[in-house]
Image 1 (tube, rainbow, N blue to C red):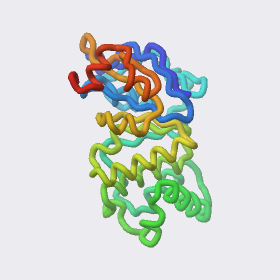
Image 2 (image 1 turned 90 degrees about the vertical axis):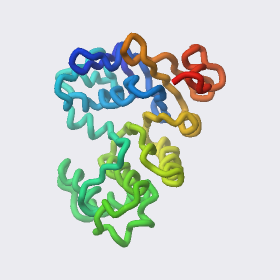
Image 3 (image 1 turned 45 degrees about the vertical axis):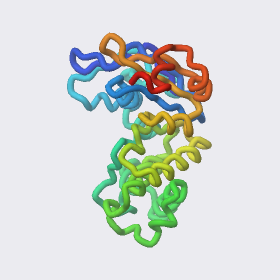
Length: 252
């Protein structure tokens, strides 16, 4: 599982997250909700150390993934990012063919045979529901796909590296309702094999697709967690007044 203990993230002198202790159960979909600016995306980026790429950013506390503190000096960051895949708010396929989008990362992480490359490509496109839509045009540019197809291609690209965890940062916010529904169906199917953590502003979506919920909030100019628990329980009987107000729509 993923577990954070006292995790804080700073960008220069600004504290984005303060003292976040949160457990993401294995094989579950955990949704993170909260108003804009409360550090939800910063939390995701810290988990596979994408914050390392931001000048002036610093992270403290502990992030335990598969019993290893990934903030330790001996952590293999390249391996970490292979095991903890990231899907962004806006689909970001490479300006290459559909086939190359899947196979480029595979080639960089090893030298599989052509037969293996084609087999993995078909497998991940099938798992994301894309194979039937694109199998006859794998040589076409990925940029010609619809927004929803591009997002599913990005998920397929992440799955090709056989991660254990998927982090999804508002994966449906740039999509229309029909495309969003397809991505939600995909997320539901993936939890049989992966542990997923999704940031979303859509409370109805969080309620539909997640097993567990974490509510982030701003306190003293930093993001904190105000409540966590099984999604149905948090929505039906929240224990924190902030959670109750936010989920009812009277705050946030």
